[in-house]
Length: 98
Image (cartoon, rainbow, N blue to C red; front, side):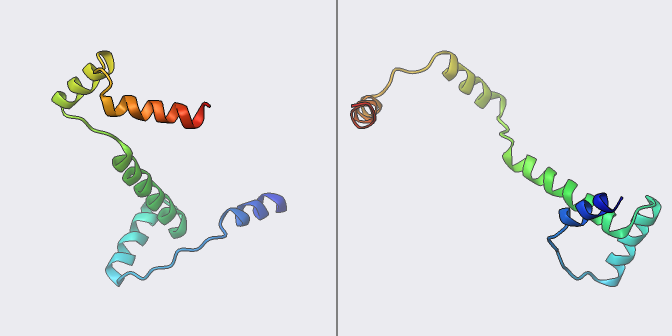
């Protein structure tokens, strides 16, 4: 049991500290009580869930129907390489694959 407790403490070495007004604290405490959870556990879960949602929203690429059609059409029927792209490939080949 001592080992598990030690691992649990090691996982929570970092700290976040912030102040809230009294009504906000009371609201959070009430929510934690309703879920029968400790305040810290409730806050950690809420913050982690919010962080994951925010990251997912910013990392997801959402295309309009028109953009989706253009994107997939370009993948299926790629345009011929431009002269500039051909020069870039040639320069890359010259530098990387002597």
